[in-house]
Structure formats: structure tokens, C-alpha cells
Image (tube, rainbow, N blue to C red):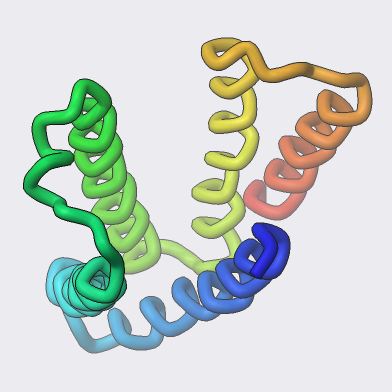
Length: 138
């Protein structure tokens, strides 16, 4: 399957996360909801890993492993904060602000990873910022 189909599948699935989390947290603490939903994620990832030929142990000390550890830490902080924000505010405001990671990650790719910045990409990022502002500011 091409990366675009995987991206569309990710979009379709991730579209459901915030509304489902919001409904669950109408009567459950955010910490419990994040634990349940992310335990399912870990079990799913373990299942995929078990069907692959990857020896996890040999990768834990790879020279690039610290980046994976840092990514895990950033993911944990981001998801915990996201769920807390969803428990306190409306999905229609929290999700666009959270979604700004698309812009900030793209900017890091351009600045830190030397990815090309084209006029089209710059315009798209500017429109994304404008869209989030228009959506999130009440």
C-alpha cells in the first residue's frame, strides 16, 4: 500500500479519536481514558511487531535509539496534554490548536532537517495557521 493510502487511513482513524475521547471523558477521568486508549495502541503495536522479523532488543542500543526515546517522551507529554485539554475544552477548539503540530513539525523539517521550503509549501503553512486561528479563537 502506498504511503498516501496509509496517510488517508490514518486520517480516517484519527478523525474519530477526539470525538470518542470527548464522549468517554464526559463521565471518565482523562487519565483513565488515555490509559485505556493508549494501552490498546501498545497492544496493537506489539501485535504488528510480533508479525515482523524485527528483533527489538538489538535496536534498543542503536545509535539512533535516543531519538526514538525522545520521540516517545514527546509523544507521552503531547498525548497526556491533548487528552487533558479535550477534557476541559470543546473539541472544535482543542483539535485545531493541537493540529498546529502539522505546521510546527513542518517548520522543524525545513529548519532542522534542511527540507526544501517552496512558495507553495510556505503558502500552505500560512493558510494552516490562518485556519487554526479562525477555528480556535472564539
